[in-house]
Structures are given as structure tokens and as C-alpha cells.
Image (cartoon, rainbow, N blue to C red):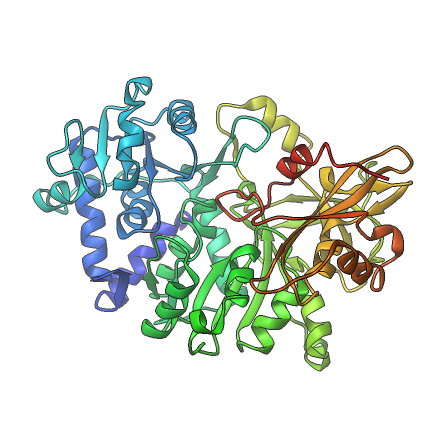
Length: 525
């Protein structure tokens, strides 16, 4: 006897056992799990009445609201496929993703209604446009809340297999059109189970949505929090003052965040932070975090940081930096260095190998670079409607991540760069991540990005782009000498450009290709 693996099974259990517990906080709105799932059922019924069938795609454009969260249950339990889109993209991007995915329904938050009105004639397959908010009386839009109000909770539940598609998540598309990552019910369920085995959330924990739900399904925390009957505290925009206020006011003890968000919290002025509650658990991923950031959040704030690693294509977690007993004896600074590593395979994720160009596993010496490759339970079904890209990424039976890493003698993986971002200077490999981590230890530096720029003599040399902390000063020479005093001299930047902000994706990843392009006219030695 088998039950298909699906995050919907977690919802069934929580509704049965914890229906009276608080499920969602979204501003003034508070919902118990019974109320939340009743709304999900009503939305499923409304969609079914509008013609949404098993296998249909339903796209959403919304920040972290209760309606967006409801989509992660109401759409899949119809056997339909959710397409949560990055709301910070352009109208042209929305058109491409809606058309490429074949979505027949588009659900939109009020902030993006005007943008969609301008391009709706370019999405001929969309039969219904739904306004999550702000749709009452607006021409061409059906109002989400009104549909839920007038629809009963009964709907026809189809049989759903664990290999059925759950979501199509589009990659950032920084150098080409975004690709649609096909995540199955099994992928998401296994990632959720692995997350809970390693991060150990529990009943009544309160989770703050600092991470966009659209990003790899909120790292599956859209289902993980529900699985343990935790409370989803919605956050529509990351603002440090509001984050700290919600942590205090709502008793938040869990959140996920990219390193750039952690930096903004760690560097927030005391007046913004206020009284910082201790004991908050943080999962960070999206880019290698700096040890200096981890050290400050754990040492000064008393928070517990766990570094996880993965990609949209792996549902998303591949590794977790699980602490070992021997780590407890390390000084905080040394412990932060270990915690900044990507770590080891999750129990449920599958197999990971760091391999050389020949395909052989690299030695566990902490020095030899290779590419992270994985196969197992969390690896996507493939790229939607793109067999060529699917074959390129995983045609040999392993998914190739594009991340360059070393393996330490204890088996812990440490990313040194994206393969395309490794700087090769005079025949030596330089990890931009290592140089950035060193710069972030300077007391004046808030953010840093290092890229390789062309050099007649060396081929390329590192150049740093730096955002200084408010009220702090530093010169180019100061920072170069700071790095030279801590790393081999050839790794130090040959130049520093001070900027107000770094270009980033909606999920907080620094867009190094933008920096390389904009810095092409910088004179080099």
C-alpha cells in the first residue's frame, strides 16, 4: 500500500490535527488552519467552475500575501500546475512566461494590474484574469475575494500521482530567456521532509516570510511550515525596521533569507533594530554567505544560522551545513568560517559529487576545484518544453550545477564560485567569494562583489565593487591593503569601485555580468 508523496498530504494531516491553530498572519488578517484550508477549497471550487482542469497551468504574480500562499494548495489539489512568477520582472517577461508555460489563468496582485492590462492582448491562451486584491469593479478582472465568498468548499478531487507536475518555476534568465523548471509533487515532498529532518521546526513555530514565495516555492517553506502546523507571518516587502518589529510583535522564531538580506539586517542601525530577540533560527542560501555576517548575527544577535545550498532545479536543497560535535569547541570566528560552507547532502536529497572536467571525483583536500553534480529525489523532471536545455543540464544522468567547489577532508563541500565567475589570473584560480568574504570583514564595508576584468599582462585580475556602511569611510588603497594582509597578494583586488548599491536579482543574487559589463572601460594594470 502506497500513498503518493505530495505536500498535499502534509496539509491533510495538519488540517485534521491542528485545525484550530493559527495558520496565517497577513497584516490585520488572522486565519486558523481550518479557515485557511476552507479558503483554499473554495478557491479550488471557483477555479474548477471556471474551467481549470487537471494539468492546466495557473500563473500568479504577487508578493508574500495570504492569497499567494493559498495558491500553493488550491491549485495543486485540482491536479493543476502552479506557475509562481517573479513579480519584479517586466511586463514582457510576464508575457513570455505565461505563454511559454501555456497558463490559462493569471492571478495578479493589485500592484501589477496596470502592467498586465497593458499586455493582456499578448496572452491569448489566458481565459481568466483574477485580481488577488483591488479587482472589485475593475473591467476585465474577476475579484478573488468575491469568488471565494460565493463558492462553496466542495470540488471534485482528482487522483494525483507523485510524479505529476506540481509547479513550473522560472529561472532568473540573466543571460537568456528564463527556463521553466518542472518540479513534481515527489520533488517538493522530499525536499520538505529533508528540511524538517535537518532544521527541526516544530508545532507552533512562527515563520516570517522574508523570502519570496515565488523563489523555488519559497524553498518549499510554503509547505514545510504547514507540515509542522507553524504560523506563516506574511511580509510583502523586506524592510529591516518591519522585519525586527514583526519578530518582536509576532514572536517570530524562524525565517529564511539570502545573504544580502542578512547583511541588511546585520548592518541595520540600532535605532532601526530596536530590541533584537535572541534565539531566531535562520536558514540562508542563494549565494555563499560571508563568515563575517554569520559571526555577527550569531555573536551579537544570538541567532542561529544554518547554511543550505541548492538551485531551483533541485527543489531546491542539495546540502546543509549540519554542525558536527567537534564544531562546538571552535571559537566563534572559526565556527563562522565552517558555517559558511555548503556542507553535506541532506539525508533525503540524493547523491552529490564534485567532479573534475574529466568526470572524476575531486580529492577531499579542500583545494582541488570541481563542479557540483547531483542526482536523486529532488532533481527536477526537466525544463518545460525545452528538451535541448534539459539534455545539456542532465543528459548524463547527473544534474550539472555550474558551481565550482572544493571538498574538505571531512566531506563538507565549499563553493568557491560559479564556474563562469572563477577569476584566472596569470594561471592562478582566484575565488571571488573568498575575496568578497575578506572584504566584508573590513569594518567600513557593507557589501562587496568581486569580478575579473581583462588585463594585458595577467589575462584578468580581480576588481572589487564595494558599498560602504552608512557613516563609514575607506579608500581604495585601504581595502586593497586589507585584503593583501589576509590573502595571497595575487588574490587582492587591483582596483576598487565604490557604489551606492549592487545590481541584484529579485532573490538577492548579485548580477556580476552587469558589473563586468559596466566596468569594461576601467583602466587596468
